[in-house]
Amino acid sequence: MKIAFIGYGKVGAPLADRLQRLGHTVTLAARDAASEAVRHAQTRNPGLTPAPVEQAVREADIVFLATPYAAASEVLAPLADALAGKVLVDCTNPVGPGLSHGLDSRTSGSETLQALVPKARLVKAFTIYGYENFEDNVFPGYDVKPCMMFCGEDVEAKEIISGLLTDLDWDPLDIGGLNQALHLEHMTLLWVRFVRVQGHSPGLVWAALKR
Image: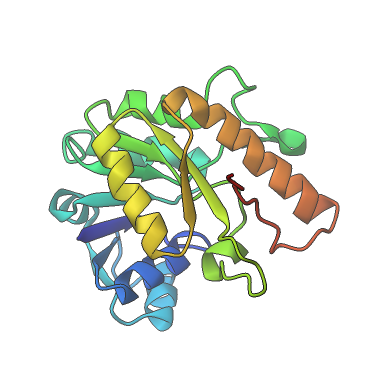
């Protein structure tokens, strides 16, 4: 598949790298093809190709949004037409002062972004953990894979993302519609408090055990 990344820092770059190595065509949506962020991503994987933002989005089947949440609205608003019909993977999390929810838990960041690009098929995924687990999600010695929860309204789009998660060695768990995104954002905050504040291992993940 053709996949474009808007944002390729600590979260986006390892995902872009691994998806390209799985055989997907991965493009970095870049305002400046010579930027430090592009160079850093290409140092990791020379197979990642930059392209102008709108071109990258229009030519993609799937678009990953992996910018800071504060920048997401400004980035997405001009791309509403280009994103029509595209699967949009929202990897962002609104974080407020003191590791609070950035929208005061009134609504989720994902629902706010979906309203900006109503014709995009938005799926909230690749959140709930820090970037370390996108670099390496292998846990030797365990008989279960780490769980990655995701949600969205479009059934087909979720099936596509579930497939990518499986290919990336996650145990995908569909938790429902986009109204569930707020809970995923709170799970991210919980992980951040555990790890960044309390000092637990950044390799901390959840598993979905089934009987």
